[in-house]
Length: 268
Image 1 (cartoon, rainbow, N blue to C red):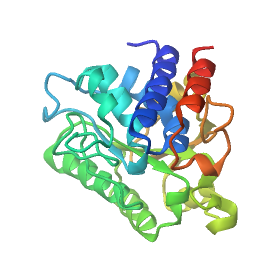
Image 2: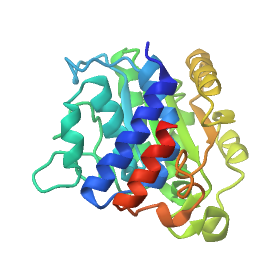
Image 3: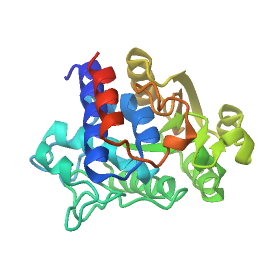
């Protein structure tokens, strides 16, 4: 078990460093999802860096694939590949593309990036576990703007129909997408009522409170006959003052001066 608070802080620092080095990428949604990933990989995921494809491992689908820097950070910190590789984000020839590639990066279970499709992949993995008599679990990290996609709700209906209680959505509810506030672009709320209507077990938490995340993931393990969605209220750009709650930082890398300020804040 790892110190998840320290893990999340280091992840945020690495996210800023790699985006600065690449001069491109998506800081806002990576930083808002960091605490979910720190607790999930720090305490719950059954994965082994020495055997990244072992059959009985838990699966993770980063359905909002543009938050790849957060996933790369936690995978490197867990030992799936050298930390030094993070500096090559988005560079020609690097396996660390702008969206994760399961064929190139150890620990990545699904190639994602087209929003709305990841939950369907996760459903397939969870159903396969049931059909094969395996007890591994499948986790899908989704964005809230992504809930505007119709395929999400087809997959949600599928998961409930087939009683995929080995499937958990971690919903990064930061209220912002590339074009602004989700409520202004195409409001998907109330997400809790929608998922309940589709037959899901719904847990609502502060998505930056590690104890609440920990409790929710533990509760999800005990639920039978239903998939679970953990809706975490989060802050886009969490941890960096000038990025927090700013849609403009959805897909823009910091310059050297901004990076220095961000790292100083995160260190503090």
